Image (tube, each protein chain N blue to C red):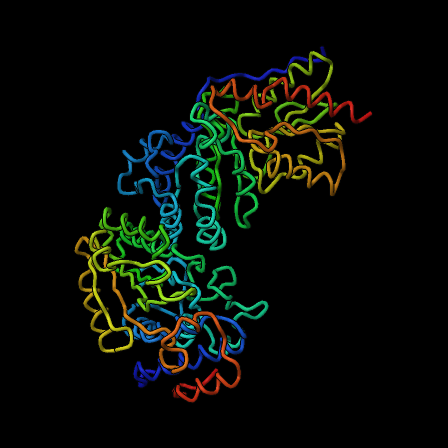
Length: 321
Length: 280
C-alpha cells in the first residue's frame, strides 16, 4: 500500500440531467441560446428549458436530419442552437447533414447527444452507438467533448455556449457517481488530472473516468501507482497532458465506452507514436455491436469495468520491462 | 447597371455561365441556364439585400439559400454582377485555391454564401432555421430557397415541409426548379414526383405556379408570394423552366446537366447570347 487515493463522492446522478440543468442555466444567461429536440424531450431532460423558454424551444418531431438543418439555419441570425437526441440519432443518422450544413459550413451548433455507448442498456445495439466519437472527431471544425459526471456535463453544457464553433457533446443515461466539484471550471481542451502517479498513466473519458478511479485504487493496493487523467475533450486533444504524464510513467492505458477504432485511444496513440512512443493498452469495445442488458452487466461483459482497466494497466507496466 | 433591363442582365449571366463551365472544363450549365431568369429577378428586383456589406447573420435583410448547389455557375455570376465580389473572379471557377468552389462553400469567405450546398435536400431545413431566427429577432425580412425538382426525391425535404407547416413558418418562400429533368433522365422516368401541387398542398403549403422564363411573370409571382407571407403558411412556387434555356443545343434534353461545352460549342452558345454588361 503506497497511499490512500481519496476522492469525495458528491452524489449519484445521470450525466443527461447535468445537460438539462446546464441548458436551463445557460438559457437564462444567454438569450441567443435556443434548443431543438426530436421527440425525446424527457429523455434528454430538456423539459425545464422548454417550460422556461417555450419560444426558444423547437420540437421537430422524429426528423433528425431536419433538426440538424434547422439548427444550422438558426445560426444565421446569431442564435446558438443546442440539438438534443440520442447519440445514435445525433451522429450516424445525420452524418451528412452535420458534415455539410454544420461542420463544413462553420456553423455554431451544439450537438448534444444522450444515451451514448453501451450503458444505454436494455434497448440494445440499435441504440447503443459506439462509433460516434470517431465519426465526429474526423470532421474538420468539430470539437468533441465527453464529460465524466453530472457536474462536469452541466459545466460543459454552459461552457460551450461561449465557444464559437460546432461542438459534439456526448453524455449518457445511467446514474453514476459525481466527483467533479460543482464549482470546477470547465476548460475545453484542458485535461483534468485526478490522481498523480508514477508507474502507469490511465487516460479515460465519460463513464470510464470513474471506473479508472476505482481501478487506480485496486492498482494502488497491488503496489502500482497509477496517474489518472480525465480527458473530457477528445478534440482538440490536450497533447501536453498526455506527454507530461507518459514522460513520467512510461506507459499508458486508455479507457472509453467506445469502439477502439476511432476513439480516444486512437487519438492518444497518434500523439505518442509521433512524439513519445510508449507501451499502450486499450480498454474499449473491439469491433463488435452491443446487446441488451443492464448497464452494469454490459460494462462487465464488454470489458469496460474497473478490473479490465487494472488488467490493462498491469499489461502496460509489464511491457515497460 | 441601373439602366439595364433584367433580360439584358440575364443574357450576360448566361454568357458568364457557359464561359465559366467551359473555362473549368466541368460544371453544371443546364440547370444554371434554366434558373438564370429567376435568380436575376430575385437578386436585382425582389430581395432586400446589401451586397457591399455582406455579413453572415443577414439581419434585417432577405436571405437566399441555393439548395441545389450544383447550379453554382448561375449563383456566382448573379452574386458578382450584383456586387458581392469582383466579376473577374468568375474566371477562377472550380480552379485550385479559388473562392468559387465547384459547389458553394462558406470556408473560402466568398461574400453572398451563407451555407455550403451540393449534397441535396438540406437547404429547406436550413432556410426554415433562418426563418425561425428571423422571427425570434423580430426581423420582418424573408428567407428564399431554391431547389431542383429531382432534389424533392430526398426525404429531408418532406421532413422540412411538414415542420414548416406545423410551426407556421410563414416567412419563407421556396422555389422549385420544375424542369422535369435530372442526371439519369426525365424525372418522370427516374422516380415520378406524382402530383407536386397536391403534395405541397397536403403538406400545408401555399402553392404558386410560375413561368421561369417570363420575367414579368416572375416579378408578379414573387411579389404576390411576398404579400402572402405572414399569414400562417409557408409558400412554395413551382417554377416551370427549361434546362439549358437560351442555348438551343442544350435545351430539350437532360444531357447538359453536368457537361462542359467544348470550344466550338462555346462559340455556338455565345453566338446566341448577347453581351450586355461586358464579359469578365
